[in-house]
Length: 113
Length: 109
Image (cartoon, rainbow over the protein chains, first blue to last red):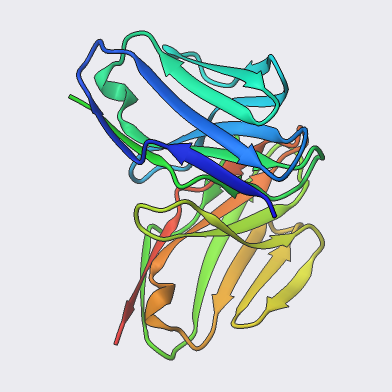
C-alpha cells in the first residue's frame, strides 16, 4: 500500500532563518507531488507541483522553492523565512493522471517568529 | 476569477442530518471533490462527483448540479467524530484544483 511521510510535524523558526521540509512517498512510482499551504480561514493554496524528477512548477511567486531529487522525494525550502510564511504546510501525491484524488501527508505547522 | 463558496461554520446535533453546500465558478469543470479535515490533521478524501446526481457512500452522500455550479455534502446519523472541517474543491479545465476555505462542522450532543 502507498504511504506518504512528511516531517517535521511542528517547527518554530526565527525570521530570516532557512527552511527545509521533506516529504517522501512509498509504494508507488512516478507520482505527481504537491506542496500546499493552508492559512486559517482560507482554502488550500498550491505552492509547487511536480510531475517528475527535476520538474517543478511554481504556482505562486514567493521566497520558497521546491526540489525533487528523487522520484518519491519532494523538498520545500527557503533561504530566509518571512513572518508571512507561517502556516500549515501539506505535502500530497496523486497518480499520474488528470483527475485523481490527492493523498496528503500529516502536515507541518510552521511558526515564524 | 475562480471562486468556491461554502459556509464558514455550521452546527448540528448528534444523530441528526446536515447538508453542507458548495457553489463554484471556475474556468471549466473536471470534477468536484469533498475532503474531511480534522483539526491539525491532513485532509482525507470523501467523495468525487463529475456527473450530475447523487453519490452515496454509507452515511455520506454528495450531490452535483453542473448547470447550477452547485454541490452539497449530506451527512446522516451524525456522530461526534464527524466534527471537522469539510473542504470543497473543483478541478478546472487545466486539471488544477481550486479549493474552498472549508466549512467547520460542530456536532453537539
